[in-house]
Amino acid sequence: MVRVSTHGDVTRFDLARTLAGRGRYWTVAYLLDGTMIDTGGAHTAPELVDALASARIDRVANTHSHEDHIGANGAIQRLRGVPIHAHPKALAVLADPRRLQPEPLYRRVFWGYPEPSLGSGLADGEVVPAGRFRLRAVHTPGHAPDHVCFFEEEQGRLFTGDLYVGGFDRALRVGFDVLGVIESLKKVAALPARMLFPGAARVPDGDPGRILREKVAYLEERVGRVRELRRQGRGIGSIARAVFGGPMPIEVLTGFDYTRRAMVRSMLGEWQGLT
Image 1 (cartoon, rainbow, N blue to C red):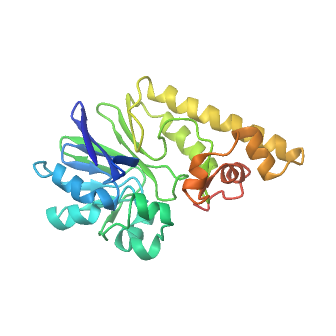
Image 2: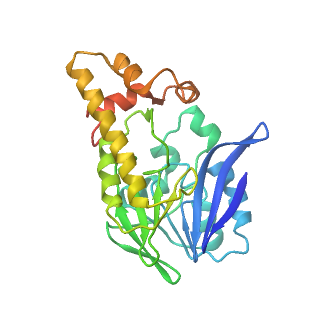
Image 3: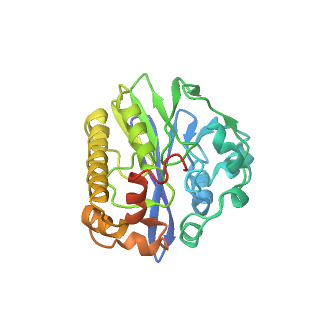
């Protein structure tokens, strides 16, 4: 399932596999003056390729190498012959995603294994052209070690990938580094952004700096509570219930790949730098 919308000269593609007549677990790709930012999952690659049939595609820029953001890389590169740009740590996964990024069942169901693609590395601060615009890569690890945001400086547009997807998280994927996310959010909050384009969820209204700082404040407040309860001798499960509430459907749906316990462990620094 593909839904297409526009925000000025940015075209947004909301992408999800159709199951039981509904799109499930949406992800987002963007097109700015010939440059694709991410390409969704493998299951929606044929639909995205069709939606782009009449569009000019000069290149793909990936925010990170997770399968729900590189799924149509291979098809677009094969059909259009375009270069692909990503953080250097992402390149091996792009070239051999099935071997280097094994997927649990829920991820295979919702997004699938991407077709391989060949990319070139982006250094922190390096610029990717987007027609008459310039996208500056900002290294933002935490959600993934190879995560970058793209900042279009002329109009202040910030493409955040999965660093910022809205909401106030109560669960985290096992092994993710929420402390790294906090530092990366602070980094992009300092940019003179005027509009946020997240890797999922709606394009938010309001000042991007304020929105990002609110997310930082929420996470830091939770880190403080988690660590205080740990100092009091509370266990991981007890802390998870006290700080993040009761069981969540996503925990069962993902086979306990996303959990409140994982959020607590990351806030305690157990997985810092391991993403």
